[in-house]
Image 1 (tube, rainbow, N blue to C red):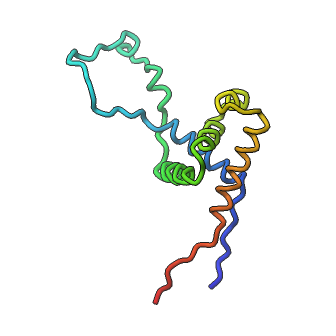
Image 2 (image 1 turned 90 degrees about the vertical axis):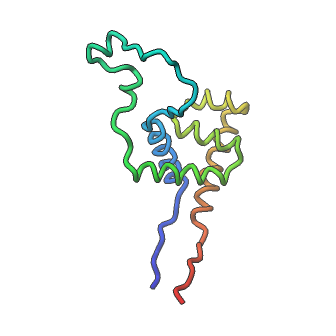
Image 3 (image 1 turned 180 degrees about the horizontal axis):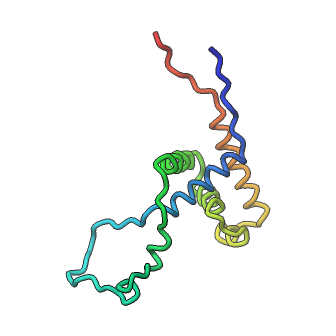
Amino acid sequence: MNTIIPKWTPEQVRARFVEAAETARLLPPDRSPGYASAWPALQRMAEAMGKQSGEDRKLGIPPSPAAVERMLEATRRMQWLDPEVRHLVWMRADRWDWQEIYRRVGCDRTTAWRRWKRALQVIADELNLPCTLPSKS
């Protein structure tokens, strides 16, 4: 039985990284146990009156489990890239302005754009490689 597997394009890879960045933004912040105060938590006046704090407003609706799984899948794909290029791809997925990106990366605007396009193509090429599944014998 021949099944046709759709080919990944750099545009699809870009869209998946943008979705991953948005999903990461919607996840609750890490509140790992560490140093804590013995003092009781103070309640601010606005919160006591029923208004939400700025942090609570940012959280909104948590992402679906499928969205989190796609985010983790996208971050695993980042391992195929060099660390400098990973930062570039993630900053662009997080909708950073190109001017800020090439300042941070330390290269020309066109060079940053070319590296970003090449990284998306590398990931698309890796995803399009034929995979061999174990036979059912």
